[in-house]
Amino acid sequence: MSKATIIYVSEPVFRTTIIFSVHPSEEIAHKDVKKHHADILPNDFFDWNNDYYDGNQGATCAIQRGQAVIWLPRYDRSGLRNGQLTHEIQHVVSAFLCSHIGIPHVNDSDEAFSYLMQFYTRTFIDAWYNTPQKKK
Image 1 (tube, helix red, strand yellow):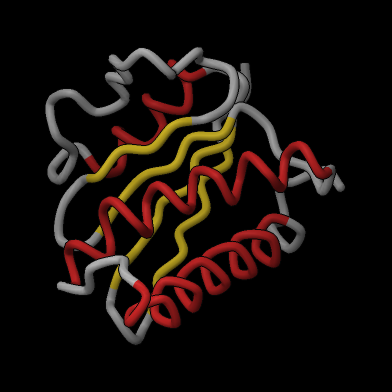
Image 2 (cartoon, one colour):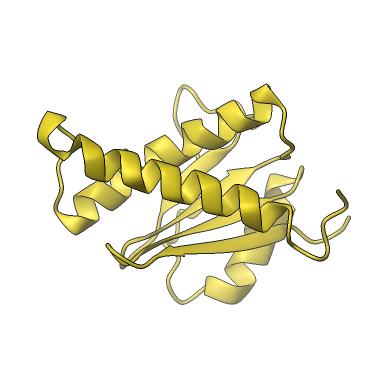
């Protein structure tokens, strides 16, 4: 099987990064990210042991220093895929990144949360369709 498509999106204001890994095989996606980031990945990287993870929708993993990984089995511009993308980005922004930068996700910080959601969604989609190895 081919390698995973890896897209790095770094946000300059809060200095956070999401590494997006897109490949149908979770194992290959994991291997390709770990190959380049073994020094910063936790031991349980891609260990999605919870009651909700079914292995088909995507998953998230906080790493360190304001960084997280999102794995998606596939991506296109369909409503389903955009829904999965924003679902995973929401987990990262709300659970990992806002905590890292010291901004609780409450009404008073809603604009910062919305900015990060918009930035990561827009930048990933732009990068996805401008990545040379992607077949459009």
